[in-house]
Image (cartoon, rainbow, N blue to C red; front, side, top):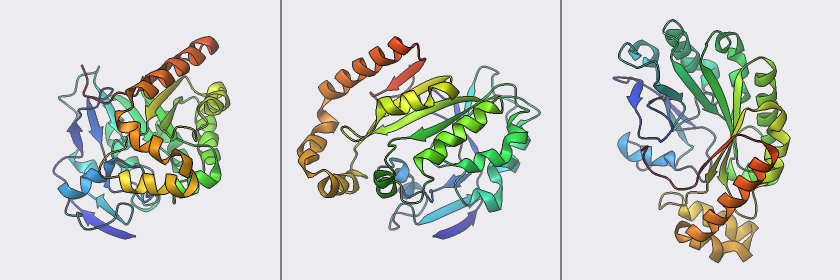
Length: 270
């Protein structure tokens, strides 16, 4: 793993995501090395075109000093961790995410944090001081064997569920992000049931096969579930499948009284 210390002009940038107005990414790259990650498009903008995703992290050492939130509306949402995990292992040393939160504390903006890491529990003392903060934890599969292949250096799915429970019990608003959903592999309904007691909402995102992750994803399917290879090749064009799954998930969540959002059709906010 190559760790580079870099400087940024601003750690806070406007977002095109449908659910966030601004984003903060204290790092470029991610040590989890998830084979399905779409964020490796960042390579071509940051001088890492020839490097494999998951082999480098750029640490924005001045990120906290560049945070200026005076022009942000009280209704605007700031998402911490849109193209990196703000609590990946390198955060234990650099504490940039914690320092960014310390800067934001006085202004009390509307914040969401998205992570896979139990390291966020280190900052419980700080998280409790925000009046409008919510934490999401993403899990795509429960099976530890599949998870180790799909997310080689990420915390286990059970550790992530335990993290959600601990956050909830500490009074932090929480949500589960079931992402990405691998058809015929992800245990969607089991994840819903297991997380229900300690999340206020469940979000869902489809597996988004793009040119940058297609080879890795199809290689995994070919090795582990070869009978599904043709089906997975069709997924980017298979609106019928995702529409059907969306209806099934909606029916299941409504039947159990679960608040939910489904992001199966990617696009910019309306």
